[in-house]
Image (cartoon, rainbow, N blue to C red; front, side, top):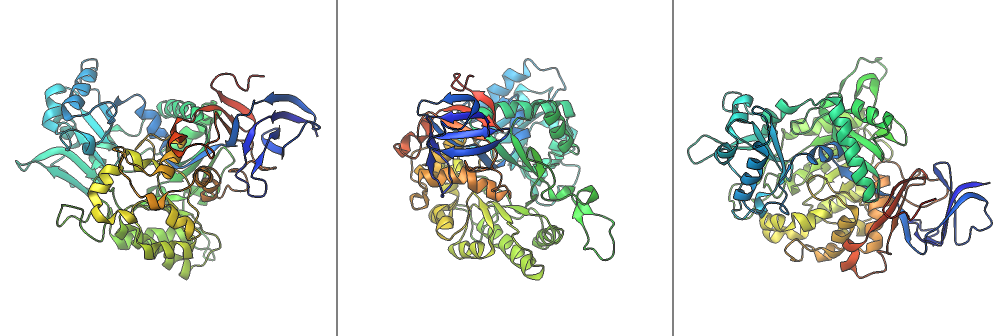
Length: 547
């Protein structure tokens, strides 16, 4: 054997329990062909001495919105690091309006009412003052709200047309819409912006790919293609294919088609009714670069928005225990039909009532139609009672929490749930119960850099410095495994990626330090030096892998 490349003199953290560490890696084509301390006897076309730098498996974000993140890069940035008050937010829109042709939409992204000085959403009247001639839509950081101005409301005919089930058009003190659209009500305005041109989607995916590689991400799982919460893109998969052909999709992607894209298909009487994409396509179709994973279903809303379906009322809001985005009977029916058709199912559930309900639907589906190794998922799994941890473990269900939520929106979540914090975004409880916990971000809801997510999974502190759930903290090694091998497992990819093991894809991330051997408070300061995808150097910050 003659390798294409041997990486040597490295601190290799393999995430492979049969061989936890090594010093060298040999790559042939797109695969790892040897791992060991000394590969000097293995012939190779090229060798690279890393001078002791740390190599880990490429990071895999198990729940993100890649296309939305790429689009957001060109929208008005309203994150808490940019604007701190409603006044500053409105001024940012005024700046964009001054250079935008009348009638052209202005989109803002990432505002968080919990972190604005006024602790409230902006109103349509405030937006009208600076943008009377342009429709404006502001996306809340959670993705579960948006705010529109009067021009956008007129275009969407808000107040004239019926509000979709599972949504709310908020009213001001005068009894008229104040511009805030909750959950499914966002469809009224967002549908006016979609579908976008395929060329724009390809541009967005290319920009996102470049950013991801700089953060060490080699794989990600797109949580809802085809449309979620009003962002309907009927040919979104074609855009991913076009981006791949053009060389702009530079990370591996598992696509989760929205359940709204599935439909019954004509079939032979001997077969179960397909509930799938055309031609019966379902989970597993595709290749190492682009393939279909689970179908995505929404059960409820968010914690910081206080729309998640809870057993008890939100703190300080008697009578508000959130709500489901559809009738529970319909939710359970969709889960059952998707399970019967062979899909892995990924259901967004954040409130403890929603989580319990989804577990019940999985229990029924798996009991009535047994299937080996379903790996159904609960996206976020934000509030989980101790008894439901045991149910999740018994079923082999995969919770998909977001460690980065702890820092960026943790303070708002704690205010919303009060003394129920021990149930919020469990990690350790799941691992101790034998449950696989992947790493994910829900980007662009928060900064999706994996190293920041790992930092928060370990340190468990909110943005204000308050303890979140210290008893749920992971070790750095466990958090690294979450963002690599466990994320691969969540997508049925553990035989192809997630660890530095002979026969697996040569997807690697080079770091400037060993994040498992430093002060946990320093994990966020770790720098990604290089990223390799399929044996090819896709990012090299300072020429470390220059050959």
